[in-house]
Image 1: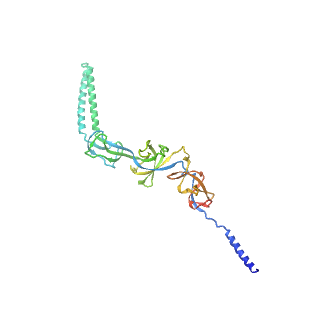
Image 2: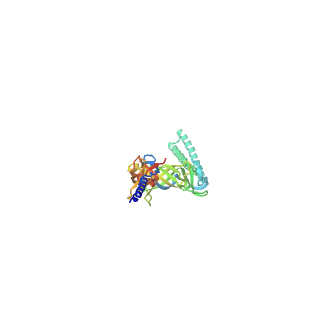
Image 3: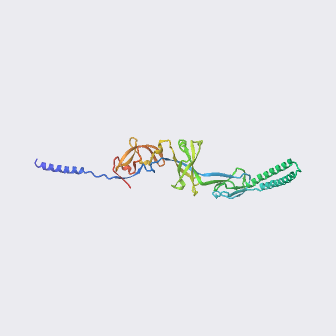
Length: 348
């Protein structure tokens, strides 16, 4: 027994030392995270950008045609040409109209001479007033007929009503033009419009003047900013879809009609509670086993889990309708390593 006790004391001493060492806690290294402050104007939004797809159309599209019939003699433009306002685009053979005008003009000149002679005689009192009135009426009719015929001569030439691009050349020299039959299609693309189909469930939220940004696939990641200029009042016959047109400036004329685009419209829903919703990146919001949504916020050097209520999904994130305040700093990077009360360090 005397030999066992010293050995037992040694063992107990070793255990006591090892237990003491175990009680020394190793400091937990803070997780480096990034945050966004809800109060920041860029993140605390009073608008929601909802995305739609559509295509670009010209601000103005005009089919140019002659007001008279005739054989086309000259076409001075090709498809894709840029033409200035007032440029001569086409002419028809005006020979018959010129000859008719000359004949009418000669009749008007004769009627004028006859009227002047009769008026001179009338002033001397040698002729009845009715004769002078008849001569004057004949002159006015002949002159009006000559002027009307001259309009046909003028309309034998087709001019550009505004500066723009020839979108299509529909006729060729030698073709027979007729009133109203298009010869050219002229496009104004100094401004263009993004024509966007809007579902019937969204159309009443949209108003003229609402802000929008448009991304055009063919022009890379660049955004073009504009406003809603027109909204159709009647839907498509096959689908309950309305067309909204977003006016965009195009000074470089790099945006071409027909290009596909995506438009993100700022709905101004002043009569709904979502006008002050917070928009967060979708990946920041997590879900518990009980299907409760939560985010991590930074508080006093630790990550705190906060339950939130989510709203609509938008192009730039998901709406948070409750659970956060303007002073919260939501963790947006490193959150997948966190649990409640994990020490954190905010990256600068």
